[in-house]
Length: 124
Image: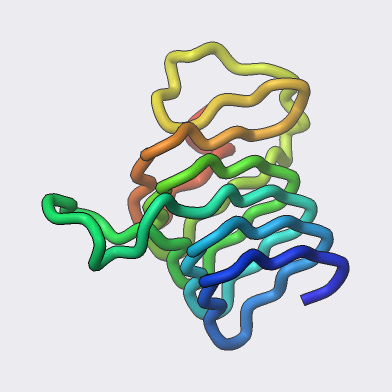
């Protein structure tokens, strides 16, 4: 962890790298995750606190997030990639889980991203 703020209640998996980022309350980060230059809002509650939820609120193993804003209560599978490599400035709202505004990818609150989800593949 370098140049970052980590809120209370976070769990960070072994081998993860967090640089120049803000990690919000109760964020669960799997092993070998890379988060750079990003804001992760966190979660409203821990997994065990909700009665009827099918997914775990976490950032899955091996995911990469760079220059993004991740809203609250996000479930991210393994190997998710949220990086604006194409330097796209904006996308329309046809993408229900992630939009780009002013070149910043924004994952919408309560979204679920499946294993291997890749921003570049979704917006092309």
